[in-house]
Length: 273
Length: 272
Image 1 (tube, one colour):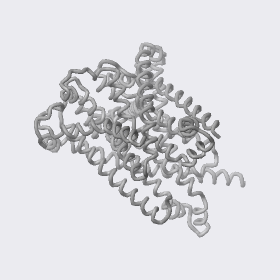
Image 2 (cartoon, rainbow over the protein chains, first blue to last red):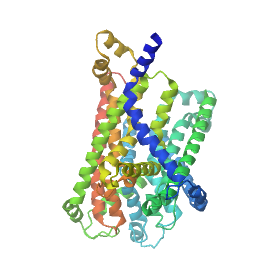
Image 3 (tube, each protein chain N blue to C red):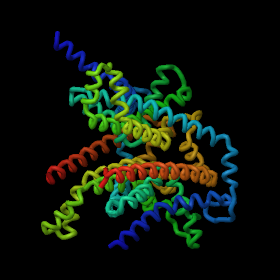
Image 4 (cartoon, rainbow over the protein chains, first blue to last red):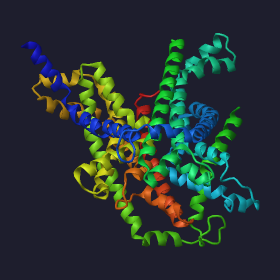
């Protein structure tokens, strides 16, 4: 009797989560199951592996997307880490100003930002007019990478900044007192301690870069296609089964890489402790 | 070293801001070129304000953002409280992982899955996809806003602990009263920041809206997208300039407020 009471009580305790659980099952889990269904059926609705098998044709597009987004993420990290570090070491009033300067582009719609770079870099654009040159930039891989870096840099800087600014100031002193050279302080103390910021920064840049279609549409000048473009094209042309199959593969790829990255960051944390 | 970091900051912020400033600059161009400045004019702003499309899109965007922020805040706050009170750690982890899916997944996958879901739903209900226009959009926006609300409320609830609510219960509050009169005021900052986050996420979303939306419900990001599909017209620049200015003012206000807070704390000796 008492056990029964307790059980009922335990369900009652968390009844507040019920609407959310209902919502999540209906609008998160079920749509993903439908993606699975579409990926493994043909347009008539009968079971087939055809979509998954035909994904082999898209292998070059997958490779290109991974290549460009990994390069963009790496560039963001190289540029973003020093920036985050400098901001974290600035005076508090200055820090707030810099963070605000980072937030403004971040809050401005991605379409606007991407379009504004395109207008500058385009063949008849502002840059060429200004310099009187005829550089061909839009339509190159470089332009797409630049667009990704430009659009997603704040997503790299902010988490690293948060992480670095939380590191106890005495860490620097302790490390140098114990005989670390400034570079060693950086590589042995600060960098490992900011690993969680780096991991979340990398995630926040990599995921939108690998799945973008607007940046490649505008800055790729229609010369090449990324996974995002392929999915979008399937969506526009109504080839939903192939689109679902590509989405499914992309999701699996991202889940795998996120899991690996999290594992990596946990191990790093383990070593420090 | 100091000078080097200043130059670095200047350089990066310069690159971040040049495109936005160029865009603002050319929104005042008298011709429709976005490369050659021919003279100052408000022509594109006038054209923008004369198009009913802009206002419909603005109205739709705001209605959608306000409703998704409100709904996701109510469901999310209740969910955070429920998750906190759950005894089973396993269940907690499971719910959190499912909730975070829309946050971890690329928007394009979330958009695709939502769209397929509504296609199937329309089939079952025997209505056309367009009939669901607004509802489909609202449901999708609430879904991707929920993790942000829960993420900002849950830590507050964890921090607060049980003692206050238990005291309230001992003093004769019903569980509901204890929540609304004691707990909610204490976790309010988290609830509000979750709501603001949900509002901005909804306001800013393009990809999911693009996949889920239908032609009869246009939002500002969708309008901008259709503008950039056409040949370059600076009315999109004018619209973007206005958006940037609104964001700038909002940031200034929030920065000013948080600055005041820090100042107060400092005066009270709360901050080192």
